[in-house]
Length: 140
Image (cartoon, rainbow, N blue to C red; front, side, top):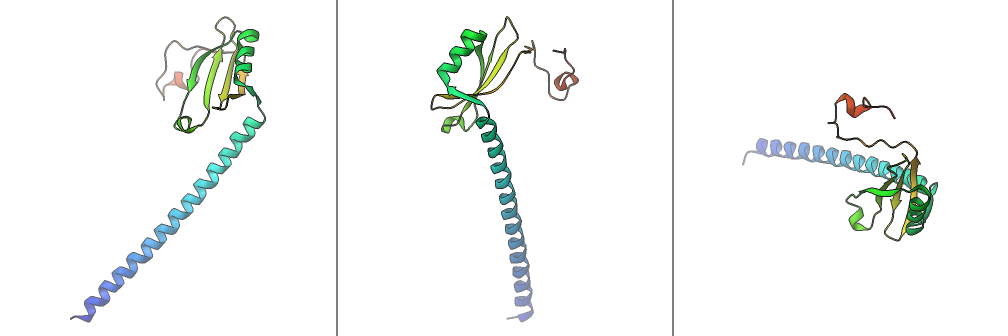
């Protein structure tokens, strides 16, 4: 058997192993960075919720209806909603432009994330990348 051929094979294998280890280290680094970013983002969301007004969903909905005459006009659901995560709800009043965004949890609690007095209902949706999509529409 030719020993020079065995040395070439060993060199190729060593090179491949070194490349694989470098790739593995790079992927571990990427996972660590992504995990840190996700943890930071989760922390921001939790801080936002902690600073929000939270109460029983039924109580908040009654207040929105009776005091502000706001009704639910939209619900945002994502992949986490189906595994017990919250939904985002939009309430607004058509006669006076007030609006409220709630984060509603399956346990019957909702947190008021934002509310305001200027709500603009667009008659059509602009395609992303067009001037109208980036604030070129009618002012509030």
